[in-house]
Image 1: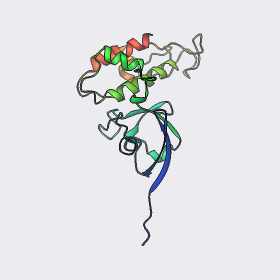
Image 2 (image 1 turned 120 degrees about the vertical axis):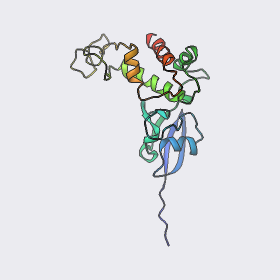
Image 3 (image 1 turned 90 degrees about the vertical axis):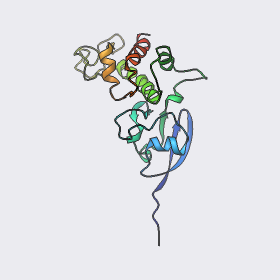
Image 4 (image 1 turned 45 degrees about the vertical axis):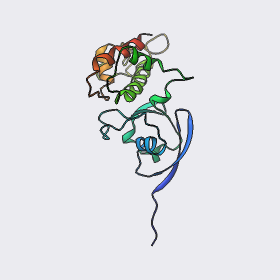
Length: 191
């Protein structure tokens, strides 16, 4: 009797290191990272894309790795919280989280930090959120496509507490450390 295999080999680059890994076609990126590659930075929280503990940068964009199938991302570039820093130094967002005590148990912290780094890039690019007022970066007076309005071709997004909370709403902290997360992100956003 022939048994059909569902294993495939994919190539992914994780935190700057290339890997070839064999996975079942049903394996999520989260499970491939944690179980196949031993990268425990992204956490398995809800496993339903609701808590954000598994957030990674996938080809530069934040995604919930529990919802992404590894087989669909052959050749992808992945960055986890463990790979954000460089030359043995923490990423500035990681330092801001420490400075503001923006975590308690730390379980959600890697996903929060990855998401915060990505959301600052999104705001810098002029991407609006659900609470961005018209003409405040997202619209930028350029018809809402986020590619005009400022001296550099983009409007400067105002990242007040409400804007940050909305942009980080996909990442939950069960320890109720929300109060310190927003100031940590605001500090880096001001730089």
